[in-house]
Length: 389
Ligand code: NAD
Ligand code: MG
Image (cartoon, rainbow, N blue to C red; front, side, top):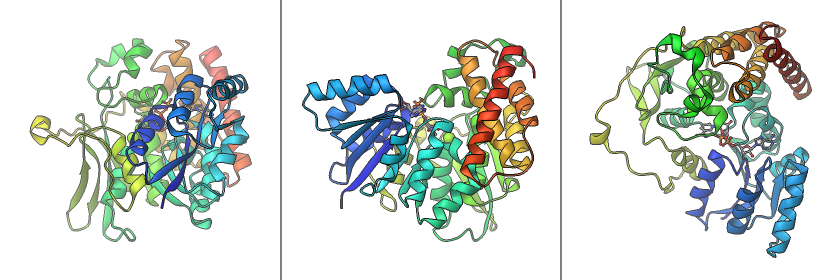
């Protein structure tokens, strides 16, 4: 039966890869809704190709422009505007699957709405789990949603775990490429530019996650994501730097076995796996050439070079308010770095200061989560202005 699919963040890197996979399986998937912030041209072309029932743009002006263009092209797609419309297309009764691929905290409310509506949620938006792990996982269980990880590491772990329970699982190994600055002299990191930071050696991704990969905050967010997704403690998760990005992550068992998932670094693999699960679908990804790969290297992560990874472990131990603060501060810090208002190594400085202001404990209501998110953003903005709190 054809599945109706909503794609939140359709104009981004994950959104484009999702549509590439979907286009290979027109008999299986129909695009019900596409949603993005303001990229009129990209979403217009996507509407022409996939003819969704709805197209959502959060930005009002952009939505009006899209509506005019679609009308002129005799399209039947209806344009909705504003962030409430994201929720509307995520929880719509006719929708089966929701790809949650909005970047940052903006993705939390619609991703949670999809979980509360009992959808299959393909979760790329790791920030949602970092902010609301317990609340989100409780919603998944309470409303019978199917949560499938899109993040390549978590998708790999999902593939390597037993199909029932976690019997015999000792440890989850999260692989990290180490980003573009793995070997740069430490002293040069203060001066690196946004262009250098977003030039990831193996993966092509959106700007925010590219900077997070360079600071290893991405791996820190993923450690927290793994704890929530798989119900493990932080001591059961270990990060290993693996510069080739061929092994996407591993599960170690009590009998000494380590299961790994390998492949070319292309997000269409985890996307196709989550769309097709439990079946396998053609994704368009080239087969892995082990002879060309030749080597698999492993290193311990350097926490002096990458303080963001340490900060994420500490925040997770401190509780939910701290991880909300970590995420909010990081989003503001990355934006400020991309605008050249702060340096690369100011990112961990800012994040550490803001996390220290967070109360202890974990909020269990969405409203309290959003209030803490906003408060930490304000604190972070004042750090950007004064270079201290
Ligand atoms: P991107 O910047 O390329 O795309 C972001 C998408 O979100 C765009 O469609 C944009 O319009 C939309 N968006 C941004 N702000 C919005 C808002 N306020 N309201 C509605 N829509 C908004 O990002 P990406 O690289 O595709 O990453 C998306 C998510 O997937 C992130 O959470 C990222 O961490 C995660 N992820 C990405 C990759 C990857 O390879 N790109 C891998 C793993 C996980
Ligand atoms: Mg990842």
